[in-house]
Image 1 (tube, rainbow, N blue to C red):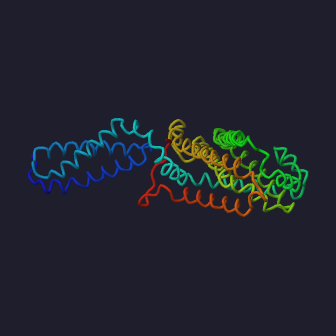
Image 2: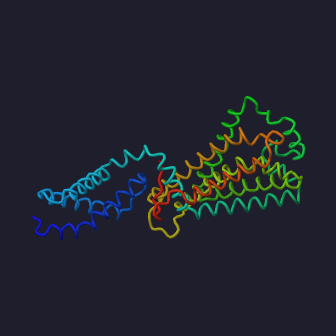
Image 3: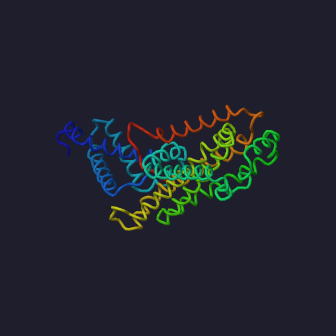
Length: 338
């Protein structure tokens, strides 16, 4: 029996509000990992709220408080007894707009390392080709990149974007498959303590740097930017996100400064690794479509300025999305896979 109803409600309400806040956070990110201390707190607060509801049920007064508690206890029961796992799979929009950018920001150090490696490789590749033009045969794996930039530009202008006429969908699918394979390889090579991911990103950067230097030295910078920016503004960051996932995986395997066993460390990072991998794959789908249906059209069919502006717009939108999306009240949620 409650002797002083108002005092009882005043004392218990902070606990109800804490439970409410935890349930809202979990609902916003259904697949976010729940630390053991928070799981214990959730169970304790849920049991206390259920007991408080039973005590209030005998009173005709405070109907709004009872309804609030009934809703709170029902939500807590659903979370604790498995409805969370069943309902989380059907929220791809929440995963894409919140979990993916939150995971990217939480693991930003791994992305910065991947970016630094790629930039280092680009500087190396550009310098190597500038000092030794014969290095093109080693640094560029594709035959169409080994020819003269001026000859290629002249050929592209003559074909007026019709080289892939009737085969753009097939070409787009090929690009998506190839780039996704490279990106997922960067992720998987995290199992080699990150060494394989490191080498792959550096080499990929060296290839980009060599291509850029080749066209710049030939005086074809506008063509280079108009060709690469529309799809590269998304494709290159996607590969970097794949490298980011690989380094997150490598960090769990190395386990520096962490006392958990390897299995526990891997379980802890797998949601983030899967989220980053799927995010990179989605980015590569868009990049493949743009490369096949937009990037292959050059002047005079499509002005370089239009293509460059489009690429810059893509890059700005991607930067905003990864930096700002999913922020709610200044708090960051836990990352997870959809």
